[in-house]
Amino acid sequence: MSVGGLASGKPDGEWLRVHPATPFVRGWVALAAIGYFFGRDSFERMLQGQPLIDDRIAGRAPWLLGGGALMLVLAVLGFILSWYFTRYQVAEGYVRVNTGFLFKQQRQARLDRVQAIDIVQPLLARIFGLAELKFEVADAGESAVRLAYLRIGDARQLRATILARASGVRLDPEHPEAAAPEAPEQLVLQVPPSRLVGSLLLSEQSVFVVLGAAASVMLSALTENRAFFLYLIPAALGLIAAYWNSFSKGYNFTAAISPDGIRLRYGLLDTQAQTLPPGRIQALRVAQPPLWRLFGWYRMQVNAAGYGAGANNGEGGSRTTLLPVGKMDDVLNMLALVLPDPGTADPLRVFHQGVNGLDSDAGFVTTPRRARLLAPLGWRRNAFAATDTALLMRSGRWWRQLVVVPHQRTQSIALQQGPLARRFGLADLVLHTTAGPVAPRVIQADIREAQALFDAQSARARAARRRQTSEQWLAQVAPAGLAEPVPTPLVEPVPTPLVEPVETNDPAPQQPPRLASSPREPGWRGPMLDQRPPTAPQQEGQQRG
Image (spheres, rainbow, N blue to C red):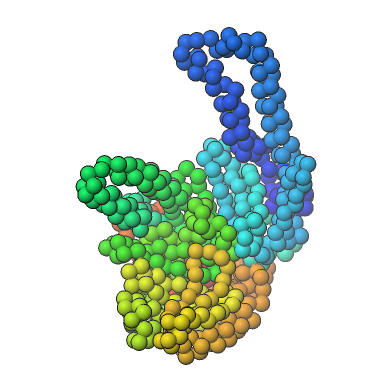
């Protein structure tokens, strides 16, 4: 039975329709607009105690009502036809969605190329218990395959099965098309609302608004013209809207790890659940605005295939956020999920220096001293370091940031040198990955060191891509043989625990794991995960995250 027929019991490959309430959930705005257009005057007259229909148009009232009814019927008919001709199928390694009545369209995505799967629930869909599935398969917003709307239970089941097939897991050798059980997960962190509010109040936009308000007050006092205060009104409205959007998107943010990948959930009115399979993140940035240093807060954003085109709008900004605000322990936990093998014997020291360090410590190569005239504050901060698995680039003395790019995600490299940089013997090295908020760049490196890094990083990227022999991510991150069907769950024995609980006063359903160095293997390891059983859903094994 295919995942599409989970609830219906239809055979594998059967074309199925979405939930019957879908057209009304998607088209309620059009219905509300029609009702408002034809009923506004009558509603206002009723509130004023006047007849519902003006005497001047009483003779044409039947025609107006008939026209409104006809438009309503046509709109409802269009929604019904749209639902009837929207069908989907999961079979033969593809998910396919057919849409359109007059202009037909078929979208399909290869399961082994799925970059991420999101479950989106707008407010009205939440009321009806429905959800939309979005499949990201390439680095463009138009590549998203949308399936709206399904029952929330069916959407979760469909996501679980697609991710299982995309990873290369076969749950039952005799029934390879069987639906997968929901993978277990382990909570990693949760962002408290109070911390989210504090981060917004101390954000960069607050600083600019305060400076603008101070400038308006000074100009009003100097010119004795109160009109300058009027400029604060649109700024205040815009600030309130930006605060509300950020708070609504980041509310109840939780991160968990499962065999499917990194699971992110957030949202106040419209909720969203993202699943990023391991190895699909192309680049990562840890940033710290100046005022956040008072509380030791950081923000993490990523470039992920499929999210690039919308990374600059509100929806894309939230989807590329791996951690809206968190402390250093949260940052290290998320880094371990993205990069399970840091490629260095002392990862905690290396990443601490990458986030907050100065000068040539922990293997970082900084901008030469002769460049202090070009970057008097940043030359000791600008640096790079390479581990066996990733390239680290740090920059910014006031707005600190650390960019991490796995070697196999380097698509191309460029050396850039302007006239001033040429005069001082400097060059910038730019790494090209998928589009997104993260722009990997080594700033003002010595020209010889930049050229050596260019050659070395090219070789590391080629070697890392040669080791990546499968599009199925489980074959890349799991031990050999884990993706193959076996009669019993695979359990990798662990002599000592690799994670330990962290003490925190923040409320959370359970304590998130804190990464610790293994006494047998120096470095970090992500949380141990329960592997989905190949035969019995109640049995659980473990695999590395």
